[in-house]
Image 1 (tube, rainbow, N blue to C red):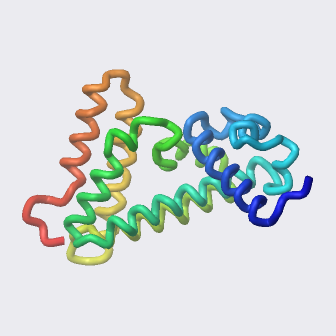
Image 2 (image 1 turned 60 degrees about the vertical axis):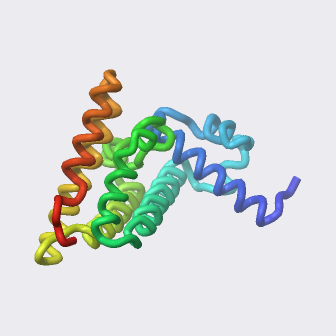
Image 3 (image 1 turned 90 degrees about the vertical axis):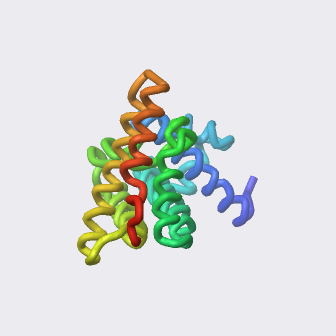
Length: 194
């Protein structure tokens, strides 16, 4: 049975969404195409009508996840500079963000897989990370653009590290302490004039 262009687009979007969640939860090698398609409610045979390969899907899903993060951060950055930085840090280090693997940050969950994978997925990740840094630098204090960028890089590394550590420990109170320390450290300084 032939599907309409609209239905095909919906199916493709569903595959990308499910793949993005499943890759964050299980890693790139932790799930195969057949299971991805089953979890998307579609047949395995339809996969190659949407993607050339699993690697193609990995690259596309990474790109889409990074774009969604950039959209969210851009929305948060529309507030005043100090409020924007607080909102980004609070949102990123929220318990709900570091809780479920499937909805966690692509950077925190897949950076090692992406580094090993290389190719288009690494290029998409690099482009997405640069975009997030650009947004973060725009709401970071500093005398020069270079100062703001440097602080944004350090802040992003700290945010991602806090999520990674909070997810890795088996003590919920300690995980909360890590996230809280990150919110305190990476939020705007008292009296800073962003």
